[in-house]
Image 1 (cartoon, helix red, strand yellow):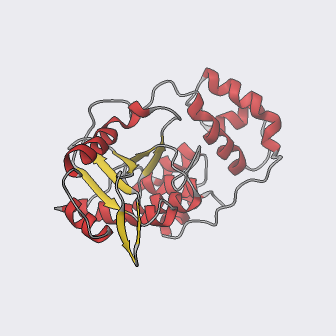
Image 2 (tube, helix red, strand yellow; image 1 turned 90 degrees about the vertical axis):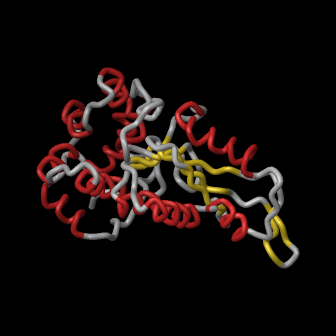
Length: 255
């Protein structure tokens, strides 16, 4: 069984990149039938995290050395070089975790982008209390999304920062755009993933045929567009406004 991440990547390559099945199978080191099965269903495979004490631990130093020499080396080639004779899924997951540390250039740290290439995402926390009903108030998170090409800003206040509410927020904002970027850029937000995308969010990305890019820790330049959008909302949208609740907040954001 392939991982949720591989399932999502198969759908992204086929739908967003228009890559043929044969090419996808060759790139990911899997069979054409596996690719066909992944494309035939909208349901992600059951996700399971490899247990601690994995057999990959013993060969991790060799993997790191190969990635140091060639950061883009496919997992299938790494398996051949280290003489790996076990299942490929667990090896691919470890390579996926290690590879970002050896990639030379952050693909999102540019100032110009192609139409539909990516959107930068972040959570903004307005510095004021919002009435939540029944005499309660709080400071719910606001999901902010900025298109890399057009710089259009969309935002929506969410109930919480959990994965379910983040998925719902993405769905509503992308529905407003009537389009899905090829890549959604996030930092290491717990509801999205830290080091690796959560199973539920990877499944969501697969349904949209998009890629989730997690920035390196302490790398604010990689999300400069959305960071500036957060500043705009705080200094130009928020001052002088009052809100009766989250729905009123979102209505004013949309307007």
